[in-house]
Image 1: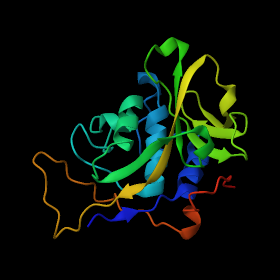
Image 2: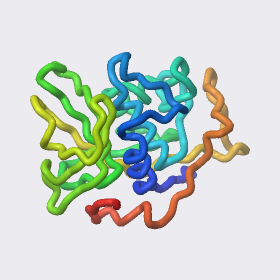
Image 3: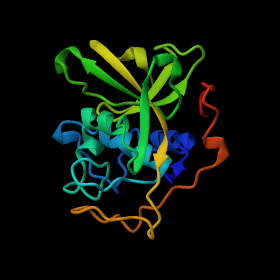
Length: 209
C-alpha cells in the first residue's frame, strides 16, 4: 500500500521567505550556470515534503552539484516529474487553472525570449481572493524576488500552474526492493514533520503569514 505524505505548505513558504534573497549553503548556487530558479523551487518543495526520489536520471534528488537529477534544477524536467502518472517516491501534483493555486504551489513562465521552452519556476507565497495575477505573490531566484506580484513579469507568452497534492513515501525497508543502479538515500534526508496547519482543505485559498 502506497503511503501519502501531506504537503506542509507553511514550511515550503517559510523556506521561500528565508532564502529568497540569499543562498542556503547546503545547495550549490546555479545562478552563473543559467539560473537558480528551479533549484530554489525544489528546495522549497523539499522543505514541505522531506523526501526525495533517488532514481538516476528520472528521479528528483540533490546530493551535490554533480550528483542531482535533471528534475531538481531543470524547468521542464521539474514539471514532468511532478505531473508523472506513476506512483513513485516523491512529491507530485497536477496542472490547474490559476484560480486553484495556493501558497506553496508553483508557476512556470514562458517568455518571448525563451522560444517554446518554459524558463522560470517561481513558488507561490500568497494568494488573494479571488485569485488574480496582481494578488498572487511569488518568491524566486534568478532574478531574486519575494512577495513579487505575478503580473509584474514582462514579455510573458504563457504560464502554467502546478498544484502540489503531497508526496509518495518510500516503502518500508522490509518491503522495498532496490532498483538496479539506484542511488542510496542520504542519511540526513528524513521525512519532514507535517502539522495539520500546514495542510488546509483543498477548497481554501489563503495567504500564509
